[in-house]
Image (tube, rainbow, N blue to C red):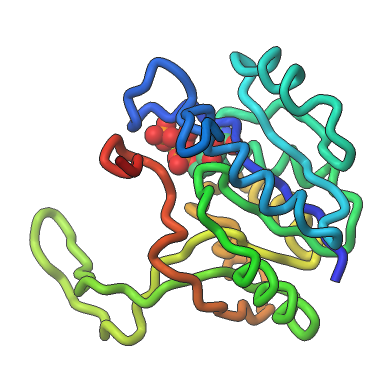
Length: 215
Ligand code: CTP
Ligand code: MG
């Protein structure tokens, strides 16, 4: 299953409170968060293209570090994650695309392989984990309802789609000026296409807050 990845690194990482973009933070063996999330895809020969979205302020660093890597294309992102993904999708040249947060450096080859297997029969799938917490719907400071926990999952990335499908959904959201919180939500809004759940695991967390950086 050949595919492109749209790798989103164009944020600012404000909640991480570092003086630079969190995806450029060095984890183990001097590898940055972005180095790690990129290398998992570069090791996969079926990943034919990496559309790497960067923030304007990181431009020279990104070109210097990744500009000459075969399969990697650099593009400037937008103001929001959705905007960055929408821009990136214009450049995708494979029939299937995985949209991945560069801030999730711990995704595994096995998880990517499971997503590829799902894409053989599905047009949309994503990594999810069953919620370990009880989730409550709250309105104006008071609990409204509690969804059944076995129905509640946390969405992760990669989120994977037939490219033509997700491009159409992004175009519609742009026309309507509607902001989703992940990519799959756009498919839920604009199509009846089923979205297959592929089980991820807790290790594939998004580096968001200072305590998310492993000691
Ligand atoms: N992202 C992006 N373009 C944006 C905003 C976010 O490509 N305009 C990317 C981030 O680089 C990150 C992923 O989307 O890899 C998930 O977003 P998030 O964790 O919210 O990262 P930031 O927006 O950078 O962090 P914060 O919200 O704390 O500022
Ligand atoms: Mg953000």
